[in-house]
Image (cartoon, rainbow, N blue to C red; front, side):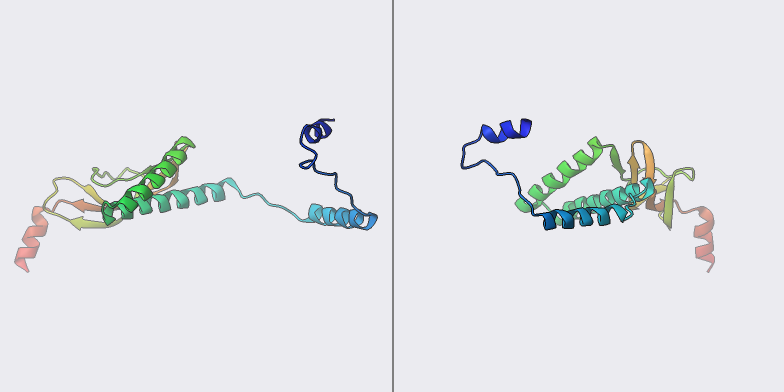
Length: 164
């Protein structure tokens, strides 16, 4: 009844006629439907879903960094707004990307350190570059961040360099 009323309230030219299939076409459709029912469909598991989310968030983060490094042109500002809108939508859905540049480093953090660099300009171990950000989905970490850490040079290192 509802379908009939939706069609009836439209102009005669806009109304859609009900489809008419021949007996043979109905049989073929039934066979195709039966074939589709036999195909096993496996939904991706939660691990695969979160991996894809982490990859998408990392790509978005990298694009934002590249755009920041590229400078401020009208085109870059517009692209930056699109990327920001995308990041805000992901954050609203529970996906948070965390960059670690400039923060203090301690051994207990859930980060993978790729390189330790000696740097006389720092007084404590500090993250100088985030290679891959940490990604959290509904407050659960789905990707560990990868960072480069600068550590202060010690007196022992200076003395051994001077003796050589």
